[in-house]
Amino acid sequence: MKLFCISDNIDTQMGLRLAGIDGIVVHEYDETIEAIKKTCEDKEVGIVLISEKLFELCSDFVYEIKIRQKFPLLVEIPDRHGNANITDGITKYVQEAIGVKL
Figure 1 (cartoon, rainbow, N blue to C red):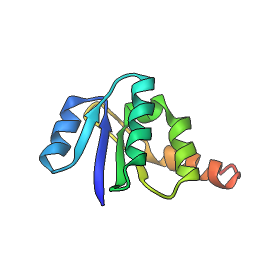
Figure 2: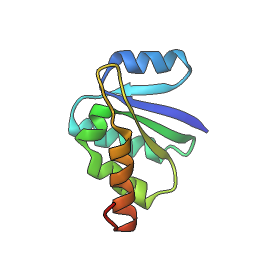
Figure 3: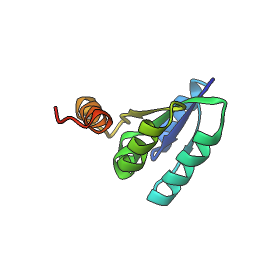
Figure 4: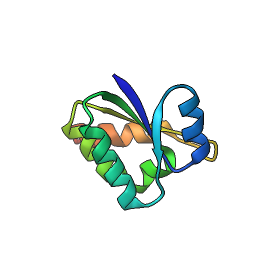
């Protein structure tokens, strides 16, 4: 299984590339959706790392994939400009998954 990074920041993508993780840099909503769809179709990819800004840009689409598919695992990562509040993301995901407000 491989990891793949979808980022809006060339520095994030290059840093992960140095660690052996392939990726793509996108900036627009449509580019992001297309990159996520294409990556999810690749059976070798087990984990998709999505930068915080892109995750916020298309969070509804990402949550829909998380709920409907087992693979790949989509994970939001902070970049050097981000201040990811992972707790809020997890809370929203759980609320949508089980239908109970926490």
